[in-house]
Length: 309
Image (tube, rainbow, N blue to C red; front, side):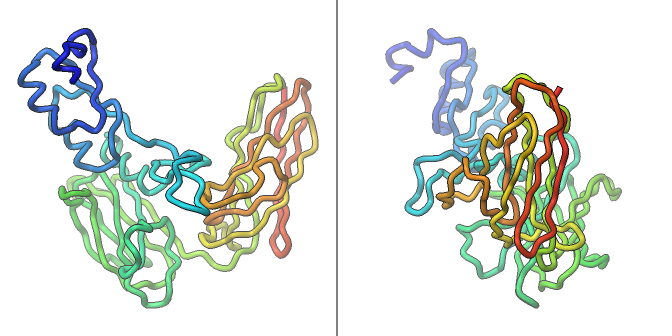
């Protein structure tokens, strides 16, 4: 319709929502037009329409980050098709997209049970039932990926160029460390590993900064993880963590990325999802030391210090 009434001719850049099928014919008819995917699916073929056609300037994905609303059904409260979850934690889909976009060598591992419902998607851990058949996926921009299990090479494969380009294996689960090694010209250029987690033993707090502005606006994002005694994240941990804060700041909110969570984001006790949650601390308008602690029955607690200046 925009073409028919001449509206598109008035624009410097013409946006197309989910209309990859029109790119080629419109480029032929309007060779000087700057075409942009203004809203697009995360499907790989939607990206191919950009990558394979230099006259298409790019695409905007719907969606980049999960958001509350447009849920598939109760008790889920959010749209879950993003590259990042509600807390900004990167999902396997985000790593896959990085393998398409990044020039810097990278490789990422995820897995699912071979007979698992594929709609659940792969997960970022190596904790599965003993001797179960596990489908392993490596997302990489390297021409070759070698898979190792506990130091033993299993097989090297090239990421396919099919409907979803990635390297794939079927592996009989053994606890330990699964490693993907990205190679170029036969040499290692990157690696990524998943390690089997033991029982939950402790809490870790990981702040994105330690110095904040005492302006009443600045925030620190603090990742809270439940780990085993070696510091490996426990992927099925769902403990309720109680947080406390002393000093010139407040707990602005807590979340976990769980699309089915109905917990109060302003409460100071929150359940981790897939072993982690996120706390946001916000400064007040005075300087000083900020002490944040996390505690849970049967787990070793954690504490960090921040400074507002």
